[in-house]
Length: 284
Image 1: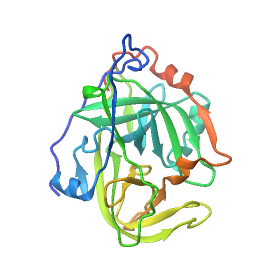
Image 2: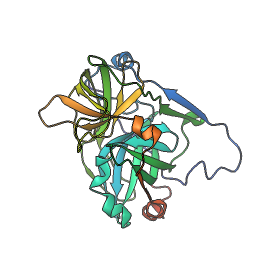
Image 3: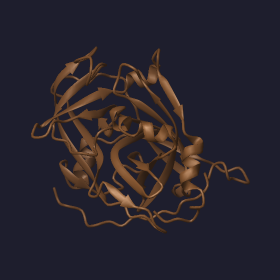
Image 4: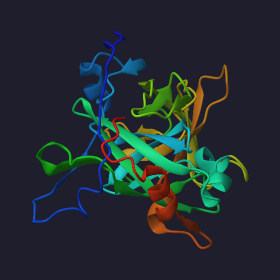
């Protein structure tokens, strides 16, 4: 596919625009499909695409400390203030977040700018590689006060069905904090056909819930990113892809929709506020 031109997106950190409203406003929510044919019109189906191709529904997941920001995964926006990702994306940093040594933040490219989010609550499912992120806005409302979200399906894809995957791959995993912060990366997409389907689980560790495999390579940072079915509905998140193996393993989203006995939740409101305090007007 044709490589897009280098893009530079900017945003300014603010208080939550919804909680700061002084008068009623009309908000719109558009549940959007991202189909294979749509990506073909944007220039191809493998490699790098425009950062804003997914209209603010494709999020990068980062952990922010007092001095640095580490971008390590992706997520999909399913409602204003709610995203879904792979649980393992968060695993190595949860101890630091609980101890308030770090906070979780998300960035969503849209309309040549960035929508910024704090993660205030994480809910993980015990028997699925899934986590729900409760988000708090930290940038201006999108154009027209219109939030785009992923349209979800609970349908299990069939073997041979062509799917689309996407995720944010950082070029530098770590960004230094200063009066402004530069985050370098690219939006990667790929597509392939379903090769295996496990209606219950594939194993008890990596894919312990409904899952499937897609013949498509994936790259570091795409974990937790959206997997869209043939008509463009969100059907799964990317769980893993072994180096040198052109197979992407995906966890179906339905366990996150129906809930699960034993789900765990952590609240991080004060941790997020701590690392953003004094940073109003900071450019990202």
